[in-house]
Length: 347
Ligand code: F6P
Image 1 (tube, rainbow, N blue to C red):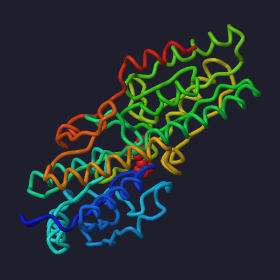
Image 2 (cartoon, rainbow, N blue to C red):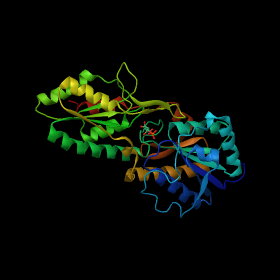
Image 3 (tube, rainbow, N blue to C red):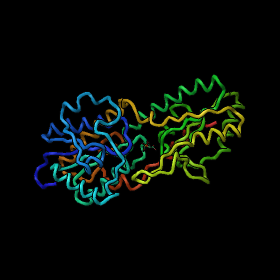
């Protein structure tokens, strides 16, 4: 990376995809071109920099992508720090591609790598992305609003069938370490109980809430559970024990476990719905399109001002810059004030 004027920047999307990535890419390209900067897209996250897989990004390539879910660049969970040869190729490719700076769009893992690279002298800025909304130093990440709306609509649909059949419906939503989706979708969808990774599951409490409702004449209940929620004694329920390159297991199954226990304890017929990747797909909401656009524009402004090692962030209604380091230090878990509000409607 040269010390001369900025000419060419690279952009990549890493980690799980989410709605709003394409609006960010589009904004980066449009703002860059207005400043006379050339942009190339790096394919599939850090993998594309290791393997030198890129595509040129111009007005034409970002035309029409604003409403599209996913990412036109592709993504992966590649961690270049897993293998010194990969790291060496990544650095060599930054040189050979003549990239003056990078825009890294990702969650805690992708931005964790970005922070390490920045400390090694790579000029870059970060853009926070995750449907889980668990990145520190930003009030919201794009993708979250779309995921919450998808989950809320599903809960609305489950209400009518739950009521018709007088059943308990357990809805498992995403949220590995934090229950933001569960709490927001649960409040918006009128859930009768919400379980999040931040608070150990108490089966007695859930069943008491359900029985309370029945005593009041309600014949159905909706229980929202984040995939990362756990019993006080146990571990998170997983699909298998395989780890990805950042050491994460594949979560999933807590809804089914819970459904069986609740049915056994209350005697009420219970069904389980796992929303899974439906929450990550589809067209971004207006809020996520606007947030993604604002983030993309700000990222290019940071680059052109030479403010490297920073991440764009939403604080209140302002888009600001924060050190990537503070954003990846610890996860942002659900505020208990918000959970207290949700609790008013339990049972
Ligand atoms: O980090 C976002 C997230 O959606 C988590 O809630 C979930 O555990 C994970 O991604 C699943 O991702 P994948 O199935 O792509 O590995």
